[in-house]
Image (tube, rainbow, N blue to C red; front, top):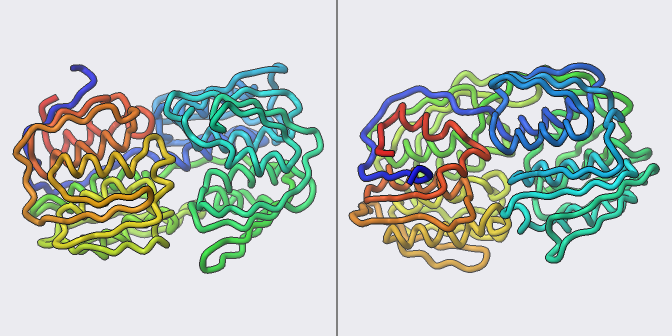
Length: 442
């Protein structure tokens, strides 16, 4: 049972300060931008997870030298057209949808064919949503059945600018088209539903030819061809998606307080903070500052006496899409019925998260009504679990694993959670940080 975690006791009240790992979105984007830079770039606090290692291996296959030591990384960029590789290569994106989609935007102007593969989970995900817009540049795609991986991309020497209407709130698709636009003469235009904007922020910080006009529900983005990208030295802030598990653990633990240091609080990423505040969780930002365009702060959380239900506005979905599983745990303890809608994107992640999240709540004794894109959660402030719960067969989804651990520590019961190794994709230090808050049987 080496790949399982067994938890039989709730966590005791705590008052701690912690650091969590470097931001995964920024880590991946730093590697990709640095691989195109004219000169050497250095990152500290780089997230050393399987997803980020997949990105490093990908740029190495494209002819870029990378030095990696613990959480320090140096990339020897050879310029915006510096990728140098044999006629036919295969890039393995592993579990990383961000890598799988963004890397395609960087390959649209290379006439060599490149094969893209991924693990079992990634190979079930939709890639037509990105091959459709990128093919407008002139790149050619050959997808597997069900529009998934493996796929083959053959670029064009003369990509043409495009107009792309992004209506799903996918930062991955938007970013891939931005990368394509940076390699294309003329003006590429994107009308994008609001989503994470790390790519745009890094483009502006690097003085790349991008303009963003922000409207209430969407952004208008104009991209021109980049002639040069300067090196980027970056001390990567902590990941709010990783911090979210400990924020919720604190919210569900009596008489507890937690400070999480130096976290990226980009407004496009903190939907969970807005949602939890509406539910009565006490959260404050301390020591706020701006770093290379990103907003950074320490996050202080105090456990509330009571939690309120929420009729969650779907306008908050894109900023919390990776955190809904643990938000559901808070709803399970709220006094009343919470409703979350327009969540079909949850089922297009590493696993059908909306379905599996509902199943876990039902195993805990929480009543839910779930459709293909919504869930109604009947909260119980006195919820206590006094039975055995086994979590397995969840496509090794790291967020299902971590959510289950937080549920076990918050509500009690005798839990056996399988596929511990799944956290290597995004948050290898998750269990080590938990040990600082509470020792558990392993």
